[in-house]
Length: 87
Image (cartoon, rainbow, N blue to C red):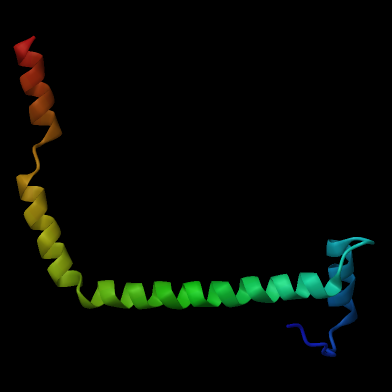
């Protein structure tokens, strides 16, 4: 359901809206899309911020896990050297 509202904006913003939509465009559609994008971006930023806080809160543990995993990985230079000696 859509609701009719009235807003006041600067002349410069209105000129930019009209420029963006062209002669057959809809101001309402553009404004609705811009606001929808903005609210989605705010939500995405909030999610990213929560993720970053979780990562930072567990950074020491995650770093220890990464170091442990790296100890089990083969050194690529050792592998290449072994292959070169086999040829």
